[in-house]
Length: 237
Ligand SMILES: O=c1ccn([C@@H]2O[C@H](COP(=O)(O)O)[C@@H](O)[C@H]2O)c(=O)[nH]1
Image 1 (cartoon, rainbow, N blue to C red):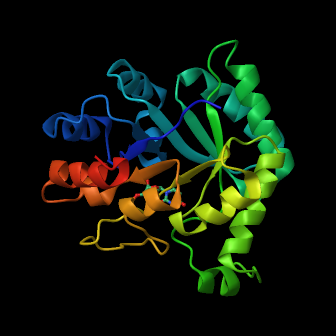
Image 2 (cartoon, rainbow, N blue to C red; image 1 turned 45 degrees about the horizontal axis):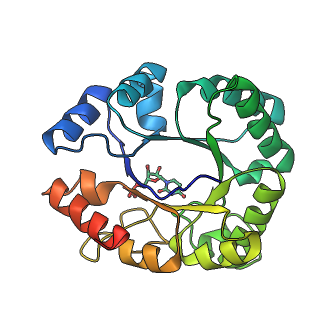
């Protein structure tokens, strides 16, 4: 497993032009970025190419969740975009995750195979929602650890979870199994729609492999100051 410790900036912008302007205005050259549904559905693979040409490592966060055959072919297409990481929802089950992995391997035609990460429970989900809306009668920890186990068995390289479940996931799946944690907030930030949040410092202490940061930077009055503060806590510099 390659060394993997990133701080992905979530480019949740309406257009590629807006995202590029934000990166330029704040001197965020070549920083690792996360492209999600909002931007990818608007701009498509062309913008991924632009980001790559500008030196950004990319996590393509499309959270595929469909029947195995469909996910296989979707991953086959995504495999050649040159991103370092893609993801699925673990709730799609083992056969779907295996199909995702196979699609990535077959689609990357000898080149680098993107890492495959499975979303366990969204960081916008809390224990109450888990029990009363999703009718899952287990604790968040147990549920996340279960999804992590099945993702690993199916060939995923890691999971998306919150910082609060990192220790449990590592205990179940081993230290090499990657954890990617969104829901990162500085102490002074609002939680917005996130429920399982943590600071970059808590993420580092918990042993998270990579963090995802979004509105605490992109909606900040002084984005670069917040970005640097997060960097400082996360990388301990
Ligand atoms: O469980 C998950 C999975 C993905 N995300 C994504 O991360 C960013 C977080 O943005 P913030 O502005 O820092 O809340 C966003 O793009 C989500 O789609 C997540 O939050 N939780």
